[in-house]
Structure formats: structure tokens, C-alpha cells
Length: 588
Image: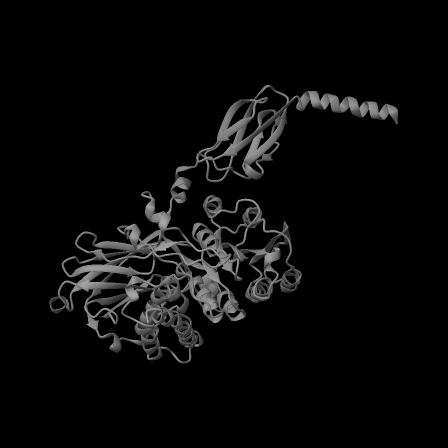
């Protein structure tokens, strides 16, 4: 036994002398000094052995040379290779690829930039919840700025989140109201004929403006092509589920479990499904599995329980690694992150998470975010992750909404027909004096950043988008029947990546709002309802009662969601009007 111990000690000494004489320690960061986690590191003396930077970009690797060569690689960054002194602490900076640096810039929802700081909307805080702060689009002089534009996407989280506040008899935080997402929620179309073409269709309408008699409303409705469900490509899905302690409530983890089981029923044998969870630790309870193994999938979903902290960063990295391992070329590769957004371990700031997702998006894997819960719900984080992950964003406030998003509208949520979709509208400055885009408001930091640019969004199969402009004509008597604007749609086909451009004219064939088709009147009611909820400067001449009158005369009474809208407006009137009455009473 003693002889064996001496042999082991001798072997360890030899090994230490051969490999452990020096120990390379250091940190990997980007050009802004942000730590880079998960960077692949190799030392020349260690051959093909792979090491990775850990938390805060730190690493430590034994070496047997005083001078060694280190190589660092990470998706989205230039390869780094340099000779180093192994006995010295290394602060190593790797540079972003030009394409990655471009993606890191602040993104605009629309290109209206000429807004002054005194037009900012105040942020109404809600304990524990966080929302991105926006600046509302103002009127723009067409003579100086005839062209404007906005991003197409299928996000609709704002409406169901608003519903959650109103159903709980609470006022809605101003920055939780995103009018374009409220319109998206109802998938409204000015043309009842389904789009059976392989391109977008566009319908427009011009009406009088109910809150400003001298102005008009211009409606632009874009309808995406619809995929044939018999020929949709195979899917590689990763359910990334938050099972931390904060998810231990009926409207969180149990709601997600029910929703994901409904979604799993639609999977086919050619589809792949994986499940990654995080709560205390990051686990992979279901590695890539055929979609038709429904009993196995349901067993894993049913077994989930909530406890522990929220290592969201590590979970996201694991989910991308799993998605890459099962990647389907020309397929639908997507991570579906479901959480209340309360990350508290690892990178937790919106900016850190944004940078991480921006790098990962270049893998061709989409990111859908599903938000749940209240009190500590982090809308700002999930919105950031979805937009930077080239994906979409929804909020599940009840079981019916989970079924709507994950079953009824499955194809619109999961199957993408267009990427980088963006609309440019060029107004005829001889006919239009000024205009404003309703919704599509920009983040404060994006407007402040001179390098910000518009980046197109993701559009799902068969999705309808309605955008509304309020315009002031130069002379309504002379422009009737003339072309007042041109819509230019730019996008890339999801299947091929080929760029497409379509152009559509807008004629000034106005009609009174009361005579417009029901879809137009209902869309108008939604937009002004959103303006009232966020206390917009443009809602001063309108009331909740006006919204009710317009909506009641235009809703489809067989449509449950539209009928529910009436109830929400009534609740908002009860919640908001008493506050105004109390303020008036103080003057007497």
C-alpha cells in the first residue's frame, strides 16, 4: 500500500511538472467591457482539449509553457488568437463581427424621430413589474418628412396584459399599452376573402376622424400568405419552461403545463420536441423526442414542479445548445420560452440579455416568448428577448388565452412566412399637410441613440396587420380620388431568404366613419381605447363612452373576443372615471 502511494505521488509530481507548472487565468470580454460567458478556449499546449469561459467571462487552464498560444471563438465574434505569458492574468477582448455589431444597435418600431423630450409619456409604476418606456409618435410635416415606416410583427401581448389589469379592477401602466399589439390581437382584415396567393395582399380605406373633424384616418391592412398545413416544414421545438419558486401559482406553471400539453397534441412524427427547465438548476428532462411520442411528452410536462431561483441566462444558453443539436435544415427551429420574466441568477439586465440573444439569433433559431403571472411580471425583458431573438411575444392571462395562442393560432405563432418585414409609406406632400402613425411607438433609448435603425419583424402564416394613420389633408375638396400615398412592403421569404418588394397605392376615397365597414370602425375603437388607457395627448376629445358607442355598432356579436372587448371598455370606464370625479370635487 505504501509503495502504491509513493508511485501515485511520483506520477502526480510528474504530471504537475509537465502540465501544471503554470496556470493561465483571465477574463474574456467584448469591446464594451461586458463579460462573455461560454466562449470556447483552446491552448496550443493542450491540443484539442476544449475549455469555456464561465460566469463573468472568467477562466483558468493549466499549461506547461511560460509562453503559450490561446485561441478564443464565440458565435458572432471574430476569432481571437494570441501568444500570452501564462504566469500573468489575462484580460482578453474579442471583437464583434460587423454583422453582429449592426444587430446590437437600438431598433426602432417606426422611423419618426423628431420628438422632443417634453412629449414623453410618464411611466406609471406597478409594484414589482417592469415595462419599457416609450415616446408616442407625434404629427410630422409631410413637406419635410414625406416618408415614414414601421415594422411588421405578430406580437399581441399588450392586449391580454391590459385585460389582466382591468379584470383585476386595476388601472393599466401607460407603457403596458402598445396599440399595434392591441390591433394584432384581433387579426382584423378589410377583405373577408382568404389570401390564397404566395404574396402579401394589401387593402386600404380612408375615413373621417371621429375625434378630430378636420382630419382623416388612413387604414393599411396587410394580409400574409397562408401556408398549406399539409406541407408545413418539420419543427424542432424546445420548450424552455421557468419552474422557479415564483412560478408556483395557478396562473403560472399550471397554466403553462395545460397550454403546452395542448400544443403537443398538434405535433407530428416528423417534428422534434425538447424540454429545458430552470428552477434552482438548469435541467433537460426531455431530450429531442419525436412529436408523436405524446405519452412521454405529457409525462414530463406533468412532472414539473416549481421551486428555487431563476437562472434564466444559463437556461437560455442550454436551450439554444439543444436546439442546435437537433437543428432541422429548412425546418422550423424555435425555442418557446415561458416565464414571468423574473431572472435573478446570471445576466439579468435587459441589456445583457439583449446582447446574448442577438448573438444567438444568427443560428437560424427563432425565439417565441410567453409571459405569465402578475406582481413580478417583467414585460420589458420578454419583449426585448422576443424582438432580439427574431421571434414573437404573447401574454397568457388565462387558459383560454393559452389555447388561443398555442392551438387556435398555432400556425400564426409558430410558422413564419416572412422575415425582416418592414413597411415604408411615402405620402404625397402636395395632398397631405401632416400625418401621425398611431402606435408603433419607440423606446426612449432608441430615439436618443443616433445610430438606431428600423429592423424588420417576423410575420406568421395568414396573419393580418392593420396600421392606422391620422392625416391632415391640404384641401379635401381637391384631393378626392387622387393618390395620397404609396405603401412599399419589404421582406425576406422565410423558406429561401430571398428579398421581396411589393408596392400598393392609397387613394383618397374618403367616407364618413359611420359608413365604413365594421372592421374599420372596430379597429378605430381599439386604437382610441388604447390612447385613453395611456392618457395620450390625442385622446382629449374622446371618452370611454364614445369608444363603447363605436364598438357596439361594429363588433361581430358571434366573436367572443370582440364581445369581451365591450366588457373591458365598460370596466375601464368604472376604474378611470371615479378618479376624475374625485379631482373635480377638490375644486369646490
